[in-house]
Length: 159
Image (cartoon, rainbow, N blue to C red):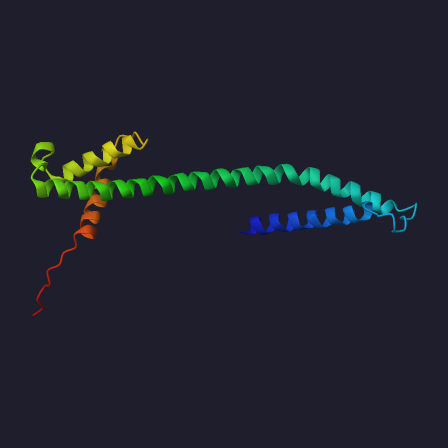
């Protein structure tokens, strides 16, 4: 957060200095000419140009690094959203096949069908990965989705 504030402050100073230089250089026909001997303006202009030349490359490198970081975070978010949607669809499909009696032809259980569905759907969406190391995670996501889609409605008696 401190870096962002420093960068914004540096940019504000550069813009203010550029505005000052532009005002000094842009004299209209109605304005009096600047005195012939104003070496401080020339020194300020040169100093501003040096600061700009030194500040722009690191600022661009920082901006590019921030963009790459943001893009990678966005890709991870997209991956999770896709996985979440695929798991939701897998649970609905497994439940529908269980209700129609077609599940026994495709898999041993709804869970096996749902895991297979997730793998096929991810490959179809451009995520060709081996899910074997992630089966437990996906199994947990499927169970959570089952509980979300089909909540337990029995009321337990206390006493």
